[in-house]
Length: 150
Image (cartoon, rainbow, N blue to C red):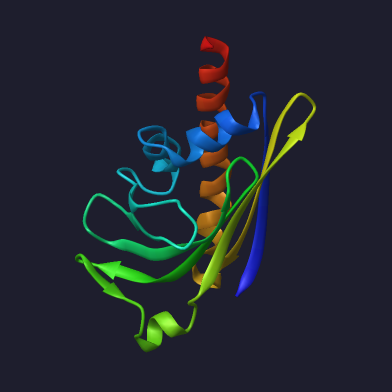
């Protein structure tokens, strides 16, 4: 599994950025860069299960490995979901799971720097390299707009 990294500087406080990133409905807006209709079910609380879904009941099942509000989130992806059924044990899933998607938030230049480091299957690398910059641009717009509105 290869690791890829992304970052974005957002002119808004860390907690606002963190909450915008993980809360509905803003989560659905910035993650549309990956798939229109993206959403999650479950909890961002450490140790809890979370399901990342598209418009049909397919996606990924994961667990929150770490959550330090406003500082760091680590998602441990455990398997896939197809037609609403979780798969954490097939040979196909065992080739890549578990894999991690980590987010760090730090104060920088009066705003927040968000860093992303994730394990990526080579088959998905090109897609991720295109989608992440679009998603982070949208996240930046959402956060800065919310901050400007007070």
